Length: 188
Image (cartoon, rainbow, N blue to C red; front, side, top):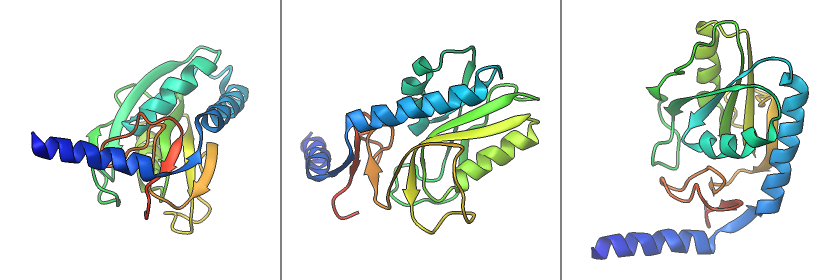
């Protein structure tokens, strides 16, 4: 039990010492703008929204009620990070579980860091015959290490510095996806 208390206290310390990069109203305004932009593009498209678990789940949950048009929701689970702070090999825990053949598909994820995961998802959807593939991320991390020069999502909420972030769907070692706003871990 003592180790659990120590771990919880360490996690609380991480949150307490973190720098707020975007407060909750800023995040909500970014999601509002994303929803407006997405609606302009997909209003008559009968799109399939694919939430990328786990991080994209929070964004999808906040974004979908703002989209006032018919859509289908499904999910997939792929990661490069797991419980780590640096990306490794892409792991498919659950491939797209909906029929994407000929569909307009919007992939919703928490962050575009390097972009290997997002590119792998788009490639898989192309292989499965998706008609149009668009991407939406809450955060585009600003650095020059993108998997492809100029890599961008079709819809981006915020561009933030190259820090290790948590909150609004992003996690610190599996925790703090539930933190309001977006925070940077002290020293990372």
